[in-house]
Length: 325
Image 1 (spheres, rainbow, N blue to C red):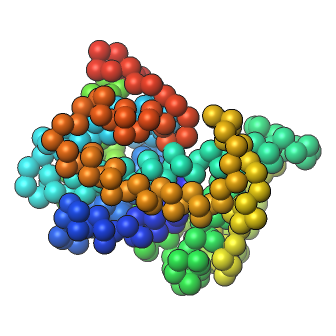
Image 2: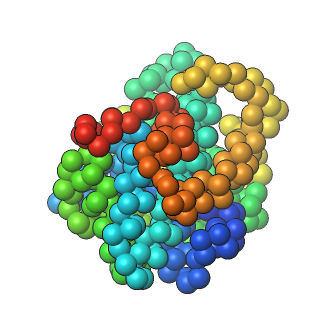
Image 3: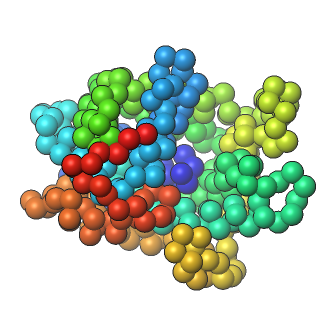
């Protein structure tokens, strides 16, 4: 991640410029671009599907892998599709590149907060609770971003109604991107419906988690605790609150020093500094990825600097040594 709203609003903030660059002329292409801004994240939600859950690890593998291999495979997959499918696929890949830009830029910041909280000495709160702490941080930032950029809260801007829009025809084209990418990068022939199913499951979870009043969130959190005996609730950390605030406890608006946990580089950047930094690289990234005539693995490595979605450096294996999950 960052979470669903931050990615969507990041995409909306650059949509007009990307439309001019590519261009994206139809509503379907623009929907595909915004869906692409969610990157591989929908795949995580396959875990709730008894027939498709075996493909959910693909999301984690894509986050961990070299982005150069993944982006190059998606560009080459676009070239295999024609007509309307090709246009939808190209728009999606442009959005997917935006997801990588924001993730790779902001994730070290989120992990800095996560590691600090898990090491603070709170009883029962250690590295084993990392995923819940991570979700809590990103949920808080999501709420801030939504109110700052739209003046709305989830009380009147519902995630399950405003994000993840795409028709079945659009999802069919994107399914093909994932099929080719998984085959070329990981050597696995995934179910051809894996991505579209993941988006449907993501929509379902967002609807279930939707709780502007907080009552459903409290009930689900209590039920989760009873069933799992976990001290910290994943449901509560992912369900957005109706919070009309332009700040977050994790925005670093004071520009205090922090350290990138992957590179150990010192920084004073705030969340918005990082958001704007990623935003400033969108057009050059999309241009090189999709409009350059000479884009190969070396060019992809130069573009991405081998920084994966998590913010860590992962060198590609190349086409002779496929990755697995």
